[in-house]
Amino acid sequence: MVVRLEKINDVALVTLEGDLNMDNSNVLRENFKKILKENNKKVLVDLEKVSFIDSSGIATLIEMFQNLEKINGRMCLSGVNKRIIGVFEVTRVHKLFSMVASREEALRSFQ
Image 1 (tube, rainbow, N blue to C red):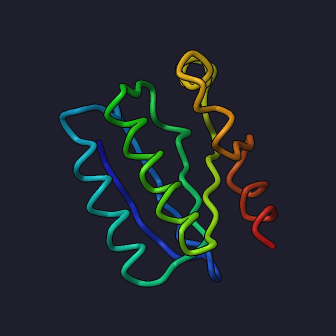
Image 2 (image 1 turned 90 degrees about the vertical axis):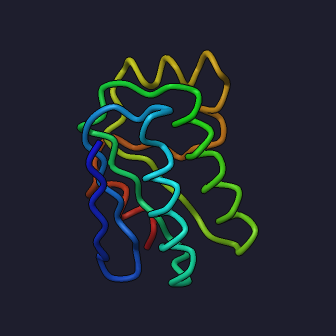
């Protein structure tokens, strides 16, 4: 999995590419720690190029969501494909996350 971080205005953008699973969720977790350490309260996770997610990947996203809630922050997911939405629905975490179709729509939601 490839993790790219960038900043768009006051939004930390996390772009993921590849599978998000037990073998690499720790890489995402470390990047999330950097984001929090830099006091970012708005985080957009772009999942457009993620084709698979397992329970470890879901747990990492939930952990970030909870950490942001503690500091009155927000997280939005964009580009979530139908397969991953199905996994979110089965595990009932779809109710936690704000999910939008595109990165642009997500950025607008933070304004």
